[in-house]
Length: 150
Image: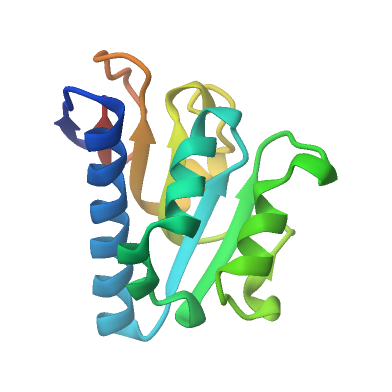
């Protein structure tokens, strides 16, 4: 596994760095193969990032119409980031997936999600973007590239 640790002095710069990397991953995939497959954790620790994703004017350039998105983790329907992203992003309804996650280009998750990550996702994801609450990046056994945002 190749790891890249990006340390930020404050929460805002960390979220900016995650957004920039997610945009880079999306644009690279869309340019190379015409679509971007993304798995998103339902972790409450990512709520601030998801709010930024939906509200930041710079994120309007995200190729939402060319994305396929899978959601994983525990949530309730009333509190689901899936509902917010599905209704406000511009992703076609048929590109929002509830079923099992197959091969994805990128997975956005919190550090706490690593322990419970499905083996399929671990083996089928090209790159992980991990938002960590501390400056310690834990090991993730995967052949994928892992970006740690601390």
